[in-house]
Image (cartoon, rainbow, N blue to C red; front, side, top):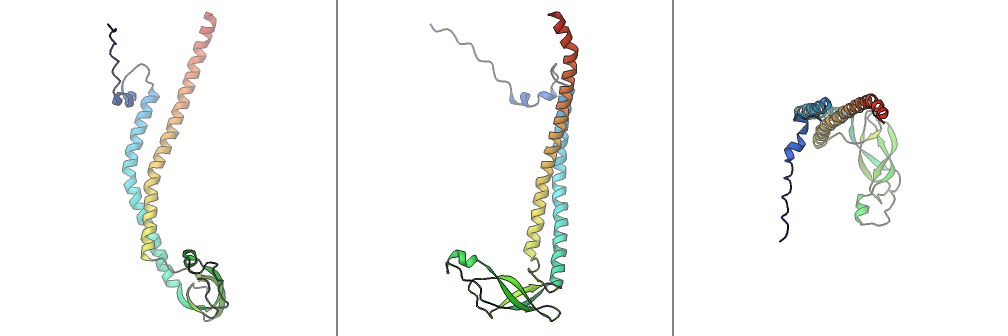
Length: 206
């Protein structure tokens, strides 16, 4: 008859393992309880701060981009420009790459003060000299990009809001890691102090 196999010890409940810092036991240090409270405090702070930071940063970014778009619309002008020479040909005409390619070419245009100027801008391949294109010119007569669109303003604000929503938990995690490292240093210092008191007695007993 095979010997009876004693039943295995029941595994410790997972919540008791995770919450050991909250239970009284002779091995728990004050720093362990402090670490638990710091974790709870930072967790609640992150939960409370994330929505507020997301809204405030997103709103501030929207106002900034909206004002930038308004300023650009007031100071940038759409005008025509003429190619001074032919644009280079793409080595693979008709390909997807050719349809996306742009080449810098010198163009002549009139600035807001009525002066004829030349500058380089990107154009599609194989555009012949004398062709007319539309360009944006700023108040100083320099070629620039078009003003921000409504979609770009919205996307910029959303992007900043998302970054803020990610930054708050990261800052909370960094704060917890810093506090934990300081507590660990404190624990090690206490351990060294206790060992300095006990070690001579152990050595003398030998």
